[in-house]
Image (cartoon, rainbow, N blue to C red; front, side):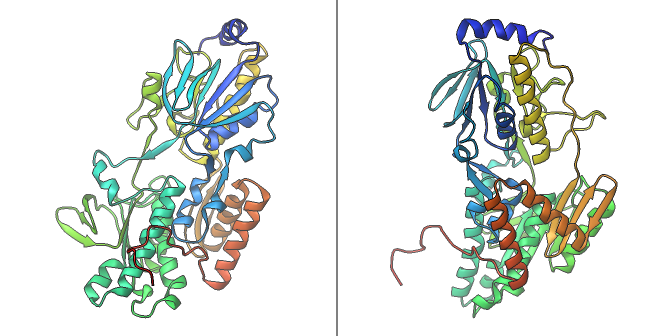
Amino acid sequence: MDPRPASALKTRMADRNPVPRVVILGGGFGGLAAARALRKAPAEVTLVDRQNHHCFQPLLYQVATAALTPADVAWPIRSVLRDQRNARVLMAAVETVDLEARIVRTSGGDLPFDYLVVATGATHTYFGRDEWSANAPGLKRVEDATAIRNEILMAYERAELSDDEAVRRALTTFVVIGGGPTGVEMAGAIADVARNALPPDFRRVDPRASRVMLVEAGPRLLSAFPEALSRYAEQALRRMGIEVRTGAPVTAIEPGRIVIGEGEAVAAGAVIWAAGVKASPAAAWLDAEADRAGRVKVDPNLGLPGRPGIYVIGDVAAVVDEAGRPVPGVAPAAKQMGDYVGKAIAVQIKGRAVANGFRYRHQGDLATIGRKVAIARLPGVTLTGLAGWLFWSVAHVYFLIGARSRIAVAFSWLWDYVTFGRRSRLITAAAPSESSA
């Protein structure tokens, strides 16, 4: 980073605007943390997002499996920042960034900036097979979660209508592709809703006989966890009746079926993609060097090399820790980056240089497998089973925004735990026909 960014920017700002303008792209964990860190700074903070809400992505799979509603895991960004007098929120899509003029061009107009924070996150990657997305949706947005919920529940409705046992068997087969935390959690949740919540609701089809498959191309599940915990997760999933396939690359995804390896076809009522992510197009906007996943390579202060006052954080940034290991794309990491950058900008506005580079503090790895079963790998201790599940539950409730959400989610989980139910079993897609019943 330029050793004199604060003075250079201060001169430019004096020429342009007496109040420094900070533009933050993205209302996820990183963007919100940056905005909040600037709440006392003498600056005009503008947060831009193409949606009007912040989404708690770690719990989207629970919306997809009818445990929670969208309102439990998403909050209007304007509401989150409404008490921050120096902040405004704009709903617009980023089109490009003019680095020389220091202007962000959006679908809602041009936004001049003195400081820019890019926190636009990541989306699904199909490793060059983008046509698969139509038949294997990923899970990054509320819309993704409700679409998957519709698909799973509609599969049971269609099975209930069918007189053909083979058709019913195919419709009640669910395939999750990808053995990371999202894939493991998704497979476990589908099995739980099929075994516990749905059976009393149907007469001709037995949801307990559903086939749930978790397919992973690599040699084991949860590759970021120690091998012993990977084995524990696989054994727990198998005890739940889930068919785990490792070393099994998917070679084709078509309507109603997938192909594994050289030709093993599996008919399915729903296929869910949890196999990989790629960064947003920020590297192209910034004309910046990126890694293979499209993440922008940043300097130790999370700045864009050679561009004072421009920062890239969260899933869209290629950041390494003190040991040279990549910082994981998880919510705590994005929040730490956002808080660091927000405070760094506040310091520079006061005319001081940023003293220290960003240091990531790893707080642990979490993955839930199913009812009363989870893994919590923390510094110095590892929890599994019920203890891991309780810690996982408390940690996720803690990270939710607002007391109302924490109470609502905690109550939903307690209710589902006691009753084995799922309260959000709603199909919100278009009706299958125009005729009324």
